[in-house]
Image 1 (cartoon, rainbow, N blue to C red):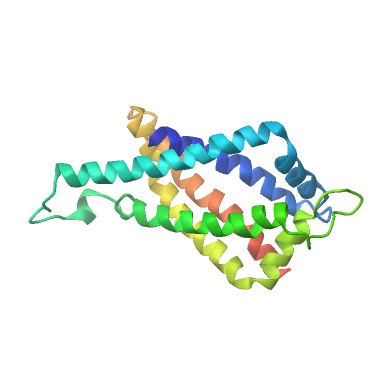
Image 2: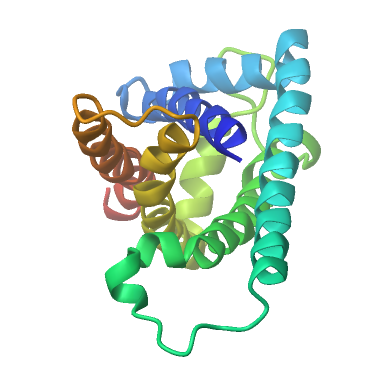
Length: 208
């Protein structure tokens, strides 16, 4: 669970770097080049397979852990102060993870599927490949409901990361009085900065 979680966290960072190219101010030229590379390079096809396996293993691990916990204690505690024993983020990882998964399916349909298989997308200026910048701008401006869903999903992603980051290191045995406070700070920053950076994209197109 922790290994696949850290793997997906690394994917988020790489994906974010590519997404931030929409703010470059070149009318999407660099972003379109990035999108074209990501959709055609052979090594990316291999990375996509690994990524899908990472998602599947992460979801399967979460399900197996939930089943194991239920089997270990089939009867609830008579008195359970959950708010004292754990954080809201840790108690609702299933909820936040499910919301992120629902968003991911919608996200893939709106961008990956449309970019690859729908012919109405114009070609990027001076190129022979589709204009991904145009697609992103059109989706967020015309399908405003998805832009709002995107922002809400990033809130849930932040909630999920708020527990996942520190928990992954602790599960791997990296728990030391000297390093754990630093990991906790980095986890909080990551859970705020990364989702906020992703959410900036639909907000940018909605406002400007």
